Image (cartoon, rainbow, N blue to C red; front, side, top):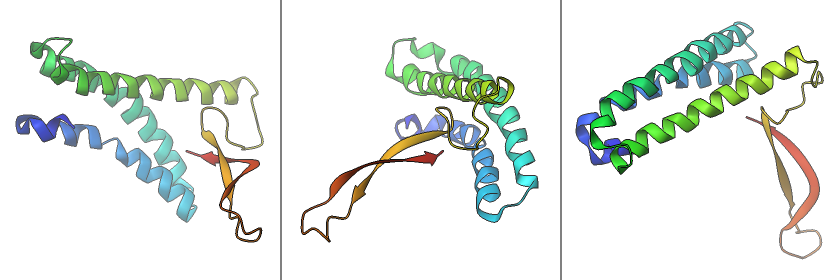
Length: 141
C-alpha cells in the first residue's frame, strides 16, 4: 500500500510477494493432488514464512526507521509485516502443537488452519429471503 504513495519503495513489494510461492505450492497440492507439493509447501513455509519474512522485518526497520517509529510511513509497512510474522509463528505453533501433542488427527480444520462460517439458506423454497443456517461449516485456509 505504501508503494502507491512512494514510488521509490515499489521494489519492496517484490520482496514481500516472494512468499506467494508458498501459496502456489499449497494450491497445487490441493487442486491437482500432487504429492511433492506437500513437501514444497512445507519447505517454502519454513524458508519463506519463518525465515524470509522475519529477515524482511529487520530490513524494513532499516529502510523506514528514518521516518520515525510513529509515522505512517514507518507503521504501515513495518507494523503490518510484524502482524504477518506473528500470525505465521502462531499458525506454526498451533499446527506443531496438534501434530506433536496429539491434537486432532481427523484432518478436520483446527483453530490454526480454518474458520467456521455460517452457511446461508437460499430461502427460495419457503418464499422468504435468505436466512442464516444454524449449521457451521469449517473452511480450510
